[in-house]
Image (cartoon, rainbow, N blue to C red; front, side):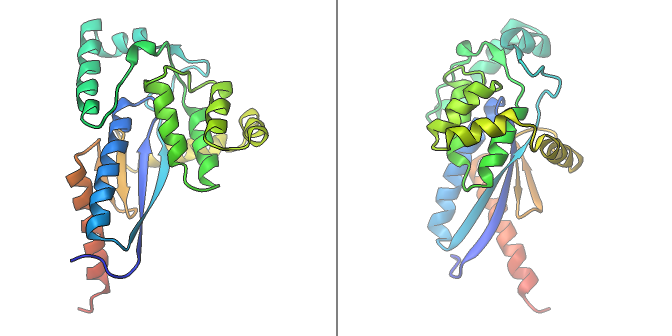
Length: 228
């Protein structure tokens, strides 16, 4: 039955900006949330972006993108096949991956710091979207503070405030602690969706899987309220 009273549910999205499947996961989440709005119009989903490092050893200045992937997956042909799988999956959601534009694989600590900073000020979704676009469609080096500043300003954040934050060391340890927490909680791949701080859905799952998990969380809340 549709939700009739206001309900707020937290959805944590553990992801990394250099993960192409996380961009697809974002699109699939959009579809799931649209479906839920139709059946649960009073439901409010509060999304929180959480950090994960696919390759914590990436140097702060980045490293050559294609050579890293060839070493990781064994051959240029294997990487090409991986790119094609991602392109095929993304095309269904209007995503056009431009892997050939990516020169450097970024260290994403600074990007995660910026997302964390933005979330203290409201919805960071537009910033997260723009970071994925920068990484996978524009070939921007999203590990470069100067690039991050441009992206943040384009998303409406004040230039001087962002520049001051990125030049500082604020929240470095907080981001590392958060990332370690999710690894310790069992996150091994991204994206991973955590519904109501209880149900963990690893991978860029089909929207129906996300809808089912959220409805399961709502049902378990109702069960907890029911006298036994």
